[in-house]
Length: 289
Image 1 (cartoon, helix red, strand yellow):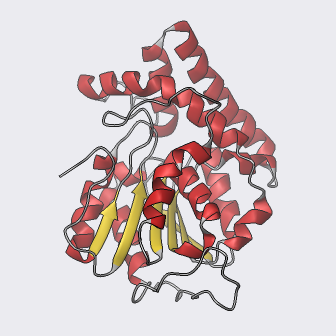
Image 2 (cartoon, one colour; image 1 turned 60 degrees about the vertical axis):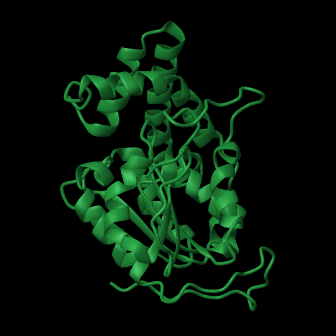
């Protein structure tokens, strides 16, 4: 059912959904979403560099979000219809980059606490949040450099999942995360160093839903609260009791919210040329609340 790049639903009458997982995860993160969407949607879940079924970064040049977004953009370009992008955490940062590269091809955008850390340099009250996430990035990078993968992985997981999250993990999952860990500094650097300006997001006119957990960490809470003001057609949903890892810990609630947002998109709209003028593009309907 899973390949190196994607999990495919059997049919796709309602359109193409591309869902991007968080750091250290893989395509299986969206298994329950695929079951909930059913056969009407085509669900593609490209995996990031360094995952179990994906090769590590080539190391031929400095890593950027553009490099990670290559698979997603190829999946957008491979269909003659507009697409629906979903992303969680790092996957949300990659989804935002892909959307900026193909702004007229994204009918809906659904992001759970996207790690668009570059925005913290540009939004009000972002200085302390940027310092907080930069400290986690340094701690993770120092652990990789020193060889203390377990210590760095524990700090990384406990930051995003809450105190004790690492200790509660199955040993096999801990081993898999330590194997992935050398990719973490690349992801932090790409997210913090992204060159997009806050004003660039005004080009994303598709229906956008930003989701955050009730107990979101400071940096991603601030980003989730700031993004809707930068997007012309966006709203926010808060998942009660959830934290940053809501798509995993509160999968049923999060997937229900995602599906309601997708239901707000009626018939998949026809292909819109990349350089279409505003009068040429199809304006999607607002989501059903």
